[in-house]
Length: 344
Image (cartoon, rainbow, N blue to C red; front, side, top):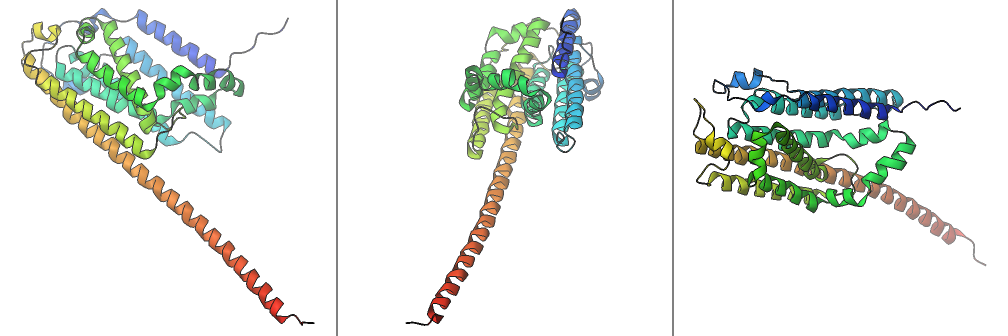
């Protein structure tokens, strides 16, 4: 009888994450969307009022632990080609952003104030998502897995028709914009305010659509489609435009959009309509600031790429010129020799 094969490290990691997810879901508290806090939010309460809800806490902790373990393993297997430290910094910053958005004081007030809820969504979609894209998690998984796993599972999935369709920049742009508009002008948003599980689903939808959008724009992972630098800039600029338009629409709605906020009794804070206008202003100003920052980073990357291309072209031109000079010298020597030969 053949001995049972030992599970490969990536399989053990997946099994651990699955276990954490099951434990988190089973421990999801009903109090996540409980009573309105008795006090108005303040900077200290938002920064220090951590709730540590089981599902997001365990998910973030599990992802962080897996990343650190995976990086250590890849570095041990490839000491001459370790995982760039900048990628680990980007991933840990993304996890910290997710933690601040979901389990800090923001999580205590997200169902009481639309403006705080908007801050949460900005952090998820416009801060955490591009940071995850910059950390290149797919590349880490490829380096961690065995050659057979890459050939049999990972590469076929990355090159499959569904992934190629979803990762196409135009498709990713439409999905991201569609999620933004549909969520804000459908029953999903209000349902998320009433039901914690729907709220988690909404956050997952936001993060997934944002990852699809940022992947072709700033992602360092291999992708089915590779956009040029000008196309990436247009990709982000057009998303900034629609984000601004959505914010303006919400800003000018004359009534409170969601029954949850319209009927919520708070002894403190802005009125429902003023809170909604503040949320729209946050979407507009914070969104434009982040998108413009991303555009400037992309322009800088384009200039650096052009500089590297120009430098390579200059070096190649120098090599070609040197070869031409060598050939000219040889030709001159041959002509000189022919002129010096005695004639019969």
